[in-house]
Length: 77
Image 1 (cartoon, one colour):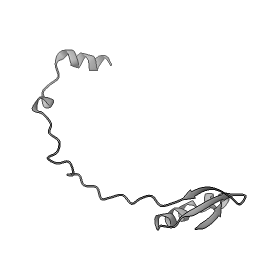
Image 2 (image 1 turned 120 degrees about the vertical axis):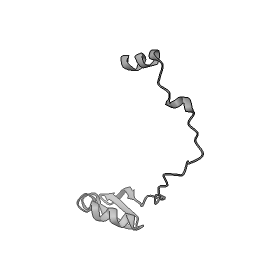
Image 3 (image 1 turned 90 degrees about the vertical axis):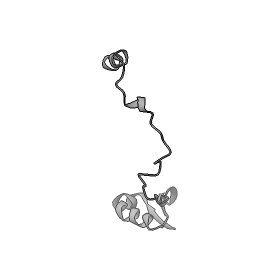
């Protein structure tokens, strides 16, 4: 595990982030005392826009116009 002081972390943050993305863990220290650890996040999975297709059903009345009373409530808000 790489150890850097706070000043180095500030001046080299982009490089340290790249190293963390590659899997390296970086310990940030103040006056030789560890204060934080920079670690890689779990990789995000690929986004799938159709993941809920067929699992959610929108009822037909959802698309009907709102009643006048409800519309007035929205306008007054």
